[in-house]
Amino acid sequence: MDGNGRWAQQRQQPRIEGHREGAKSVRDIVRASRQIGLQAITLYAFSSQNWARPVEEVSALMDLLRDYLIEERPEIMDNDIRLRAIGAVDRLPQRVREPLDALMADSAGNKSMALTLALSYGGREAIVEATKRAIAAHAAGELDVDKLDAEHFNGLLPTADLPQLDLLIRTSGEQRVSNFMLWELAYTELYFCDTLWPDFRRHQLYAALEAYGGRERRFGLTSGQVAGLDSDLGPFDG
Image 1: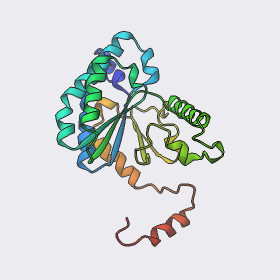
Image 2: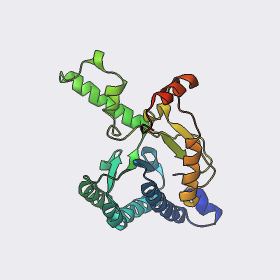
Image 3: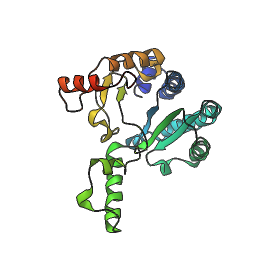
Image 4: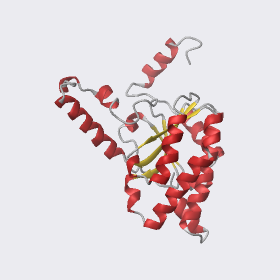
């Protein structure tokens, strides 16, 4: 969710005003995602590298996150949304951890959609942590290294219980993934748009999904093979 600071600067406002407007986009995109039936959505809210930003900005971001967790709690619970968090959440201040932990616990049984917040998260860091878990399991005699494959390693990542990552949307005109879900992106479709995050609302989401729907996902196969697989599906198999 990129472009909050530039949005504010273009309007000669403090950067925090861009983050506040960006929070409105979060609300609209989450609601729209639930309404159209998306199974899971993950928002890259705060990266491992964002801790290096000015202290005042980080503190303001933490306050916005706390406010979101408190204000959106009724809607998350009423709409059967399961809230999750990935990243080094232990680094978050207590004023954020308390409402986050409470909402994750209370929404754990919800089924309609998984909403994941990537907080103090980095793709490289996630891979390193998964590697440490594999090493520890091997040291404990619980893992045969010769049997460690991509599927097993995937199960060690914080996203293991999420569906396959189908689409990555990057706002603000930047064309890079910025250390986000590096492992999970292997066959993900990428969508880059010039819209700054505070201006990214449900219509921009629909445009991204429409573009995604027109792509052919081959996963290493040929177009002919994909067509053959499609023809083998029954009338109700999608």
